[in-house]
Length: 293
Image 1 (tube, one colour):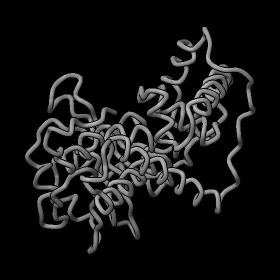
Image 2 (cartoon, one colour):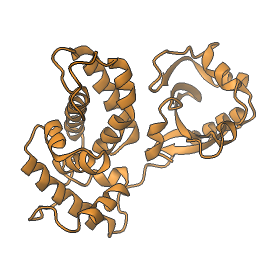
Image 3 (cartoon, rainbow, N blue to C red):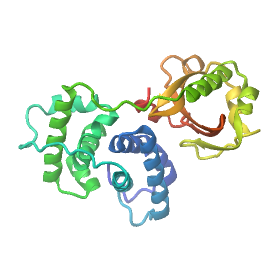
Image 4 (tube, helix red, strand yellow):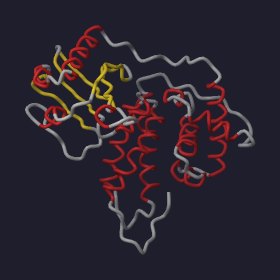
């Protein structure tokens, strides 16, 4: 997070938001413990940022965006705890970072999204900002609206707790299994997609379908529009049914279409009465695949 040179013209704010979106998602997904919820918080963050942005008043746009994302994440967690049991807080550990810090960072780097949820919010935020996103202590303190000593303490406790958790058997609850109907509908959708039968896919749609092309600025039409027509122009994409955090979804393998090593992405479906009523497509937000693949 560098303060912009005041002698240079103001950056393109929408472009900067687009450039930072993947980093914002890495933060929000780990704060919420969910790729999908994290994306919801990112969208909320960008809406609030668009409403509040004042180029003359905001000196450090990146830091300002992350403060909004931090506050939006905390609001999301508070809302969720109204309906769920309060999340367990990790026990305190005395002392500050020492010689084992680099090893602790490695434990952080390999931690699963849901593992972060076993840290208290302050520890979670400090660890994500400093160890996952690489921000300095001062920058982390600024985002969290706290002091550097408080960040150091939260970092040490969070790193220690994650190291302890890495040595324990995975006991977090697995996503709820998909129903037999979900599995059958997913299989039918995948079979038609892989056969390039897009007319058959259109027959699976309800009269009203909500389409969310995550991170794409220009909307597409669902029925008789661009969405399936764009996919019909591809040749090598293959989809596989998957459980996306307890929701029916598809994993899109792009390597035959785009080359070896090309990142895949998820498509999350919703249906009612055997018809597709919602499609949430991450084709333009492949950063989210980090927590799903």
